[in-house]
Structures are given as C-alpha cells and as structure tokens.
Length: 108
Image 1 (spheres, rainbow, N blue to C red):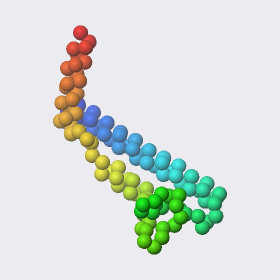
Image 2: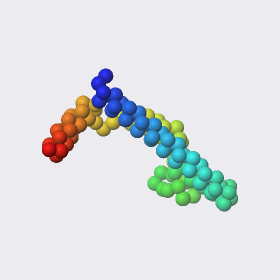
Image 3: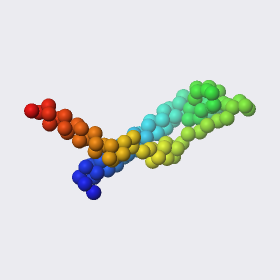
C-alpha cells in the first residue's frame, strides 16, 4: 500500500471514529435532556425521542391513523457504518496531484 493510500485510510478511520464519538455525545446529551424533561413534566407527556409521521416531537401522542417512528442509537450507528467516502482513493490521489502541481507553481 502506498503512503498516500495509508494516509487516506488513516484519515477515513479517524473521520469514522470522530463521527461515532459525535453520535455518542449527541445521544448522551439527548438522554440528559430527556431526564431533565421527565423530571419537569408528568409521566403522561409525550416522549421526545418518538416522532409521529407528519409531525414533530413536541406534538401529543400519535393518533390511530399516525404511525410512531422511534429512532435509536443503533440506527445512527448503522447509518454511520454504511457511510462511504464521496471520492475513491484514485480520485483523491488525482486531486492531490493537481493540488501539489499548483502549490509548486505558487511557491516559485
């Protein structure tokens, strides 16, 4: 594996780890906010982690003709794992060559 490919792979791993960390932090913040909300409101209030189709989390519980959608941390983790880089390693190498070519012209 060339140094460039190793660098790209390392960057992608770091980016993936950062995204997972951000997802975990968001979930922890949401759980903290959920706990605060539960402490402030009676148990009969709507669950902010549940969205109704066509509505927002602030609305009352779903009616009979609406479907509740629950999004969990596992859903976000699966989405992050399914992400793919928008550029292939060959395309990144191409653009890095172009960048290096223009950088070398500017330094003259």
